[in-house]
Length: 252
Ligand SMILES: NC(=O)c1ccc[n+]([C@@H]2O[C@H](COP(=O)([O-])OP(=O)(O)OC[C@H]3O[C@@H](n4cnc5c(N)ncnc54)[C@H](OP(=O)(O)O)[C@@H]3O)[C@@H](O)[C@H]2O)c1
Image 1 (spheres, rainbow, N blue to C red):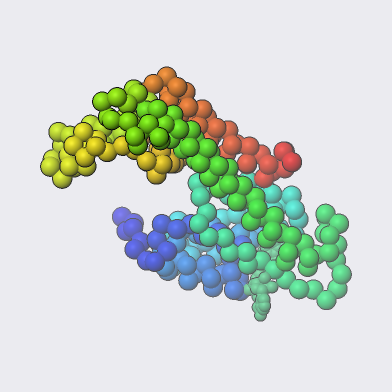
Image 2: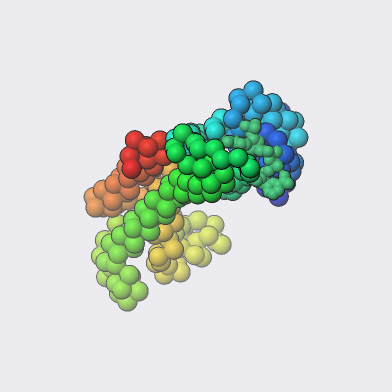
């Protein structure tokens, strides 16, 4: 059975462009021995699969193979779309691919090759991969703030109104039902510690709902809270699809 890796990069996903040779291959090998999950790119499938086999043998972790010629912008877009589809997240992007030529060559996009490969390709790839993170973070902040503003009359009411006069709760947090748990858990419950949720708690609800696309440890009680959570889940799914569509250039 495969043992979970405990190296310093365990659980991290690293995308290394140009992982088939030179500095990119050495970087990927080092990261594999540190426990990273790797995604490597190359222009030739056979060569890239060969490098992936070597990385799996070195680290024992997951290695994904992507094939793309990064001097071509449509290939960079396709690569970003494939990565977004196959990996739920990329923790580190190593923009290694590059080259230098003494003769002028123009790419299919009408760009000088060195400029296209060394500057435009890493810029485009980085931005396409960042899109999902930006949209995800915006969703989390917007819906976290909405929940914070809505629940039990809003932040001012929660801070100033005695518990027995608070409006009905829109969300049920685990602290709200912990008063009959074991002593050290009950001590922090709403009833015993007079706990009320803060912005951090609503942002956490928003993170879990947006990521899991369903409520996890905090349940919506009111119709408006249920609607809000559903809208957030649907927005998370739709934005993922849109980001992938933009990466493959069907949307500008
Ligand atoms: N080596 C040096 O002394 C040195 C010095 C300064 C800077 N650098 C920079 O460090 C980086 C790596 O250098 P290196 O010497 O390790 O390079 P390398 O040995 O030539 O390796 C290049 C890697 O990039 C991939 N690659 C090349 N052109 C590509 C393209 N158009 N599209 C997609 N992948 C492509 C190759 O994959 P496939 O061939 O398998 O497709 C290979 O995996 C480069 O950015 C280079 O400019 C190197």
